Image (cartoon, rainbow, N blue to C red):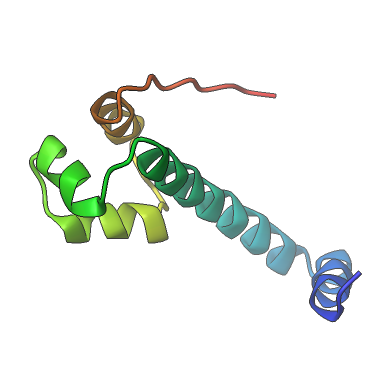
Length: 91
């Protein structure tokens, strides 16, 4: 385990607020990564996806890098623009 992973693990054990904040931030980060990977798999640039969604490249960048509080309707539009469909699961 890396030093960073050890630090995060130990800090989460002793600091509940840190643990909650870290976990929430990680989930938001994962959403952005999934969206970026889907866009790249579709062979699109941020600019091309923005054009399909009738928005600006900066909006796509913001979604991919800061996916906090993103609406399901926005995720659905992005999925549709990528020729995909959105699936939401509660596990």
